[in-house]
Every structure is written in structure tokens, then in C-alpha cells.
Image (cartoon, rainbow, N blue to C red):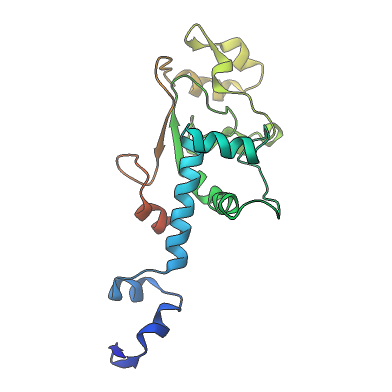
Length: 192
């Protein structure tokens, strides 16, 4: 037993409650549910931004050539996959890209602005076309861009530099250095 704000409390009973910012900081603890969400966000970050054996396996097993941004979990899917997808929406909104080789999805990855182009062009929600489809000799292919996009958007795209010799680079919008952190994900996802 202990005292909080002058009242006697059962310390184990407190851990099961929902926490609010003032209460949280006073005790320097956080909800395990919120920490779990932050680690789920890290799984989505790794799944979406890394190209390693694990991500290749998960894509082959669960995506079947579909866009991971739109996949709906099935009852027989693993708890890990369901956890990855549960962190997708809010986490995905914080992932930005710098174009290198252009292996990104043109419509679904946030490489031009703070949100993917599909938000403005929902008719392309099933398109898996990559950014580099619109490259020609390491430059933007303006004719191809004109075939699908408005002039105002093309003008913005032409300002984006292509670094064809480098990999596409993901960065986390919630940290100064662009590195994903559990703390920043927790701040994003915690219940208030």
C-alpha cells in the first residue's frame, strides 16, 4: 500500500487502470497497452522500411502480391501479422521517403509530401506502380507523368531530386534525426 495525492492506494490495483498524462508523469509509468502499441508500430516500421529475410517472408506469406497498405487480416493469420497490421494506419502516416532508386510505390508511399498521393487520387488505390516507372535515364519522364497526373503535381514532382545510385531512404517524421524510436511511437499512440 502507498499514498498518491494524499490517499491510500493499492499499488497493484493502480497498474490496471487507464492512465492520464498528469497521473502518468507523476508516477513515471506508462500503460503496458500503450507500450505494446508502440512496439507494434515498430514492427510496421520494420516491415515497411526494411528489406531483409523476415520482411520478404512476411510479404510472401501474407501479401500475395497485394499492397500491404490495404491488406485486411484474416482469422487464421498469425498474432504477429495481426499486430503488425494493427499498427499500420497511424504509424504509416509518420513514414516519409527520400527517393533513391525509386522502388517505392508511387501512390501509397509518402515521398512527395506528408501523405501518399492515393489520398488525393483514390482511384489508384490498387495500383502497385513504382516511382521509378516514371524515370528515364535518371531523370523524371515528364511525358509519362503527364499521362496520369495533373500539371500542378508534376511541377512538385520535378522539384524532387533523384539519387538513382542510392537506396530509397525512409525517415520517421516524429523525430529530429528521422530515426524511429519507441518513445515517439508511444507518444503518438498512447491513450490520453
